[in-house]
Length: 104
Image (cartoon, rainbow, N blue to C red; front, side, top):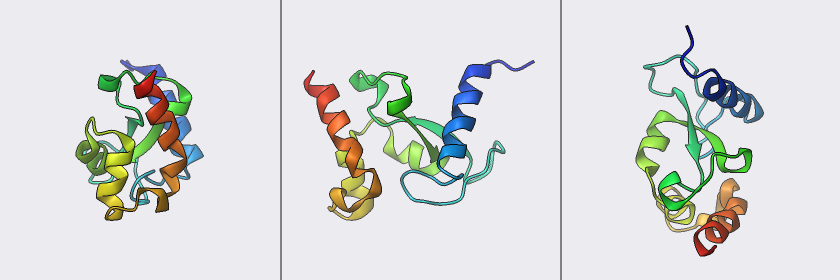
């Protein structure tokens, strides 16, 4: 019996929308559990910062990136993975959602 069918469906949807690539590092992901590049759902605006579980705030990320990002704000995470150039990353357009969410 599937324990979280809606969660799995949303992961599958974003996984397919992103052509199976991690939103952050671009690696090809797998849906198989326990693999290094297993696809996971990530909240762009972390839930700990009030980020909702809505389509605009969910991306597929490899388990490594999701784990390393943790509850960091998107702009901070993009600074880390781009060497201080967050607006050079394809996800930069989502920074405004992050800032709007934290400001109110």
